[in-house]
Length: 176
Image (cartoon, rainbow, N blue to C red; front, side, top):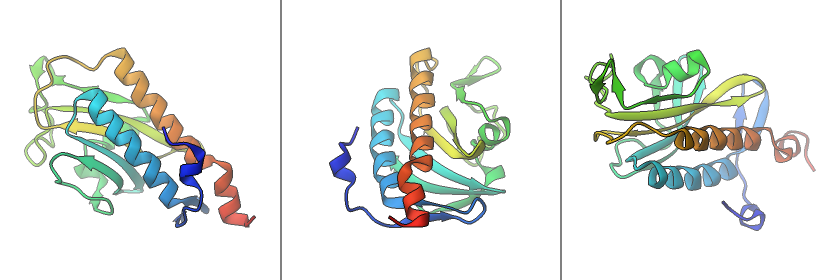
């Protein structure tokens, strides 16, 4: 985790027009990048994403990937993402198989995005799902995600929620 001094002097605001709040975008991206890299190592996954979801719009806020398939700033229809279920159900989802079949080839999105393992938790802001903290891989995972893996993903998504709700948000909106 970053020391507070590493965050001093960072600027750039992400304005959430729907909820009328501003977030220090650089701070969010910097912390997210560190958590995504840690998560990829911890979970043995090839890609990690922090997303922002508004309506039917899914935007990549930060990404860590071995493949370079996605980049920050890309936008997709929510219905074309695995994260749609996390957003709609407001719960963490961890998949390494479907109906006893190893991998995710039975998932409706598999043809367009052939993932073999996926774990994602909602990021909440003001009691609503703001986005997701998710990891995926196009290679089979030898074992299901452990309780510790799920706790780590949930805990880190909660930390992202705290960044969104932190005191610097109030300062960014009202000034020092």
